[in-house]
Length: 79
Ligand SMILES: [Zn+2]
Image (cartoon, rainbow, N blue to C red; front, side):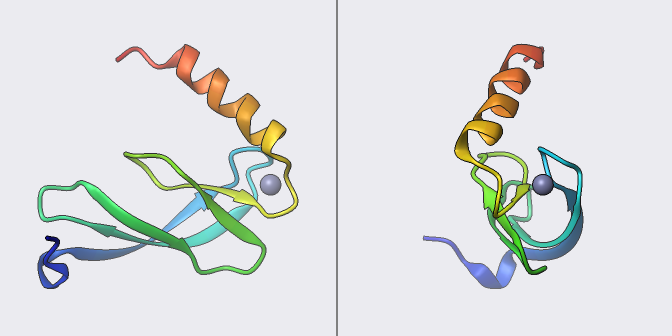
């Protein structure tokens, strides 16, 4: 069970993974720095699910555009 009172809410700015447009993101981290949840607080964006980092994209991008980024990323991450 997650004890939300011990989690840390952080407002971050992230660029759309497709076109780099900036969005405000409210991210919730555990005390040891693990991402619990995140929400886009700017209009027109949404979260692209990722288990470690908040990723955002504009609502109008297609799943195909976002998927292309994720494939690229998975091929370029060392660990
Ligand atoms: Zn975009």
